[in-house]
Length: 253
Image (tube, rainbow, N blue to C red; front, top):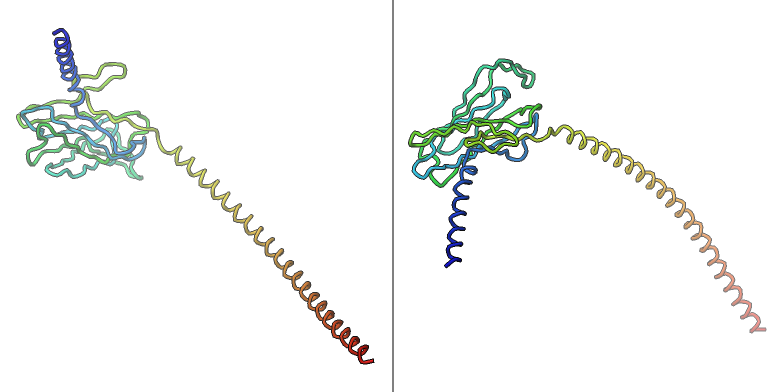
């Protein structure tokens, strides 16, 4: 009896823990495909789960950080959704491939053309963005999720390091270290490899030349020995013929 009560209490506690932890996994989040390196370009996915059991997600609005304007923002088509890109004038122009840009994308909105994200499902909304800031470790995107029952959830609270996650955290994109150093190291390695290859080629050519010279000397020696052998053989044959004649003359006498 006691065992069954303990088991029941444990089950209730487990359900409570799951209920309390569920919201932490249900908010809108952002993750890169591969690496989002400082100063580079990346494709990022905004993952939107449906946390309601009686309504579908029909609209997602992603607000880009105004203090980190991006020269390039392109949404990837998502079947069943219409994407709208909103641009805003910049307080300070930014450089992009030698051009001064006075406006940049400030918001991307996806609106469902059908049922949207139904209960029990999630949807990814990809964006190609860049160039990423070089002087920051992360980017915060504020998201607004709208349901078919007109409910609006604002994922706009900025998580603070060392503090508990807020109730409605904003999607945060962590930026990796710039790849310039890696490219420099790779370039140096390639240059060293090229030098090594050139040196090896030179050594191989020298060895081939030496082998060629050695081969010529060997051929000459072989020819001399061959001629000497022929002469010696001929002399032997002559000596044998003379010796035979002498034996024949002695026998006749």
